[in-house]
Image 1 (cartoon, one colour):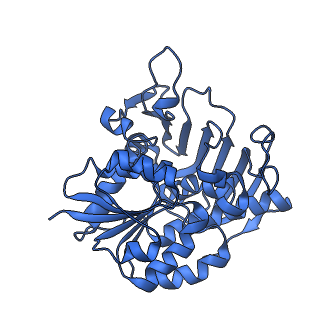
Image 2: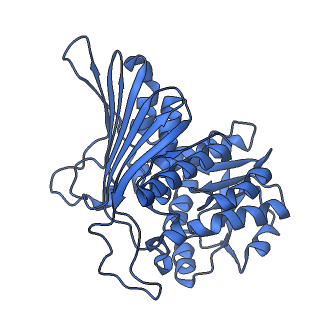
Length: 358
């Protein structure tokens, strides 16, 4: 029997969810809550038979098997609270699960024993999955670095992503993916975050009723982990000419593993073919790097901007509805937010920020 999903928010990311769900058997998005008429029109081109609802309460009254939240960041916490108070449907919620720690306490209580999966697409990119499969090659891991050199923030509905108050800040909105990967790859929780960053290039010529955008466009973040391992993030959002958008490097006592990830194919303007994702292992014992291609199915590339990961994520979420595991828990999502907020605080204060498990 086909599972029916309700979608909350069908803007740019919501439409990526629609295209990827369409590639799966046994599931369909049947109901949508989207207040913006332009986004409704775009959704109708993908889902001609979809039922629209004027508010979240109306959507929750429909006959559904699960929900997907792809609304603006600042909506996530309130929508999760309303859902929890109304029903016990499984939820796939886009990152970040919240934008400030004041929201986290209420959500932590509500999340207990609920089927909430946080959408951390980077876990499911083929080159990163290949990296995860080969972690043992590096031996005992001591260092992890993630470098993202990419394009500026895209334009979203009402430009909500131009201000920290709406997004949680760049290191929450964009980089919670990378903080999640740090915890996943190292298998440890952070204890200290130190960061430096600013706004040097992007959006400075834009003006809104609330002022000039205040989101960061570059940063360095260093994270110390409970295990004694260390990780760092280098972010530039004015480096869209790069061949690879992300480079993830793991160094252990036996060698180095790297995953090289291209940006969205629709932004590749070079006459040269777009780069192929790959993993490189460089053993310490000899100077003999080994390259493992990690190509992405072209149909999946067409369905979104995340190297096929949204499809694999949805496949796992669908399997979880039939007893499979919830692979990205609410706690995983909250840790990523806490790390991002700590990095934002460190930049603002010039001080390291300590983290605890509570």
